[in-house]
Length: 165
Picture 1 (cartoon, one colour):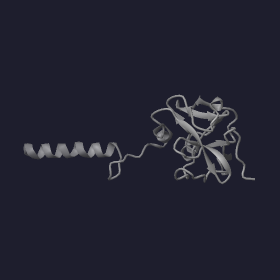
Picture 2 (cartoon, one colour; picture 1 turned 135 degrees about the vertical axis):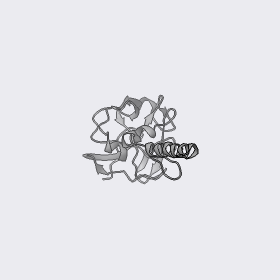
Picture 3 (cartoon, helix red, strand yellow; picture 1 turned 120 degrees about the vertical axis):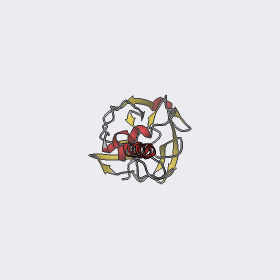
Picture 4 (cartoon, rainbow, N blue to C red; picture 1 turned 120 degrees about the horizontal axis):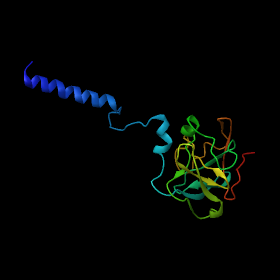
């Protein structure tokens, strides 16, 4: 084999090995591994909590108007939603103290450490979560859902669950 052909084959091998080592779509977006999905969604700064009007009354949201939920299976501030649960119901995490918007009682706002080392926002002792089927601000598809062994509810500004019944 001549020297130029050897170099070309070697370069092709390096490119092939590189492509195989990090899967990506044609657009270059790399899908995170299942165990890193919740960490990838972590905000770059403090999480903000606000309120918004829903058909069920005033409910807590993040600072962008996206609904947050409590999980009835959580007893106290420690989250019991991990693994596949945290993929469907991503925890509201923060990299600093959570901030209270209008209508939010800052005395009820806190954080708790998760098993994976991230910091999750709590309200009135309830860890807060998003629902993956909510498609943006004003969506509350998770309200009253039963999954992962318990129900999920929106919260009032007083920190109580909003019950559909």
